[in-house]
Image (cartoon, rainbow, N blue to C red):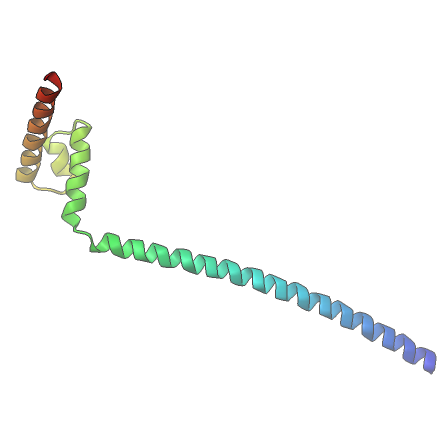
Length: 111
């Protein structure tokens, strides 16, 4: 009877050690997952802030910035109207300003 009791005691201790190791593994995994979750939440928060900034910007400003870039790449008035969502009068004015700006810059480089 005493031998059987010692055997059960060893089995219980072994089981306790196995369970203790499993708990450590699970705890370590949970901590790692928690850190990853915090990192993801921080990134999401930054992304939401940037999105709000973009939504609060003047949409016309974005259209005019895009139009200016396209003008620098050689786009014409029709391209600006079609691709930037600005009206023809605005596109024509931008083309005129772009032409004048480059003419003025050309004169500065000659002097």
